[in-house]
Amino acid sequence: MSAINTKTNKYMSIWKTKPLSVLLNEASEDEKGLKRTLSSRSLVALGVGAIIGAGLFSLTGIAAAEHAGPAVTLSFVLAAIGCAFAGLCYAEFASMIPVAGSAYTYSYATMGEFMAWIIGWDLVLEYALGAATVGVSWSRYLLELLNKYGVHLNPKFICSPWETLTLGDGTIIDGGYINLPAILIVSALSLLLIRGTQESASINNILVVLKVIVVIMFIVLGWDYIDPANYSPYIPENTGIKGQFGWSGIAAGAGTVFFAFIGFDAVSTAAQEAKNPQKGMPIGILGSLVICTILYVLFAHVMTGLVPYYKFVGDAKPAATAFAVTGYSFLQTGLIVAILAGYTSVMLVMLMGQSRVFYTMSKDGLLPPLFGQIHSKFRTPYKTNLFFMVFVSLFAGFVPVSDLGHMVSIGTLLAFVLVCIGVLVMRKKMPDAPRSFKTPFVPYVPIAGVLVCTYLMYSLPYESWIRLVLWMAIGVALYFVYGKKHSKLNNPDK
Image (cartoon, rainbow, N blue to C red; front, side, top):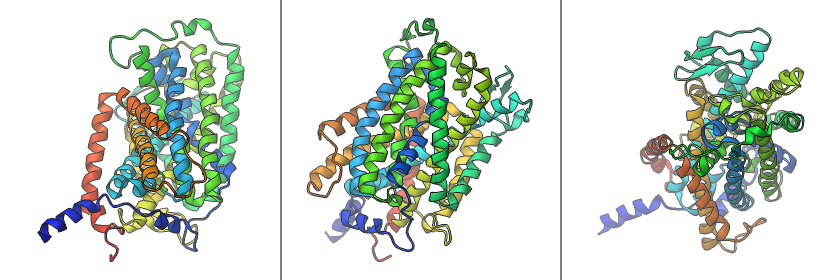
């Protein structure tokens, strides 16, 4: 009988939750902890820095050409609706549990250790592969800039072996050895993050200002050159294949660009470095989401009005392609430079978010101690930064951008689903816990978030689901081989 009870206890231990009091105690600052340096303004800039990026400057064209046509604007609206529901849930958690780790930490407090591990492992798809996706697109715009000045890099070192690259001058490169520019930018930003969060945030604030100026300039200057004929038909007729235009195409387009909305999610990973997290987290999360949704819709409307949507097939630099038809060719170079700056801020935020998630998981014992080690001088998780410098570089150097984008989207959507469920669980289990921000209209908002995000997951290609299942299977195996045995919550004597 005792043997049966022992097995039952071991099984139940994977659902053990981390007490809220413990989480809040971990959030208190000590001499070995992370510095609290981020203001509400910096948190909004952090969110805007992550949101305005690859989804706008790169994947907008792919979503329009392959899925939604000019109605890609509706794709952004649909994605924003799902983000709004999830964002409200994130804001409540972030104000309650101002600890680094984002959805991983929230799941640990509500659904238990195993689900926390699942979401932490899933966040690698969201942040690490998100940074890789943006790195690939960054390299495309860099090549476009260099070509304008007659600088031509060796074709074998500017794209992965499994993709075809079309340059602005019409040159077609059918596969190379490695995307070296993408690897170099990922490495440089990883080293910058080791230097410190304050330094990274200051640079990010400057890059965000440049990026917002570019978006507004594109909208204002491009508006007069819109050709209304490019909007006809606004919703192209479905080809008979799910996700290729029609209403299913709008949903597929929303799923494709969804990962570009993870800026507010990245804000929550920095909760332990916020000066006033109870106030700053909701402002940073919801403020960045509202600002960027408006800019997304306007930008996509102008872009598909300047150039017919079908011309963006395989184009990882659609903003440059669209702006080229305006009478402001002299601004083309400036546009590309600013987009490169904008992409840089996106990668900076994603790489920081990923390192903070693994830092928190390591402190809980679910990952090896090296991921939780803090640099003696810079007080940053430098070994985690170095690990992901290599990991993200490999994906950026060898995987096509469209495959990366779909993997990031499905990982992000799964994280949002679990956070929405987590709010429902937390309201049931801890209804009286202090909350400086409360998700309105519970349970309707969390349920709506689950339904919308699940629908967008369903709209993604079948291959994305296969990759997600394989990735999660690897994660489950790692949990039972290492995480469960070394968990500090379930093994307090270790």
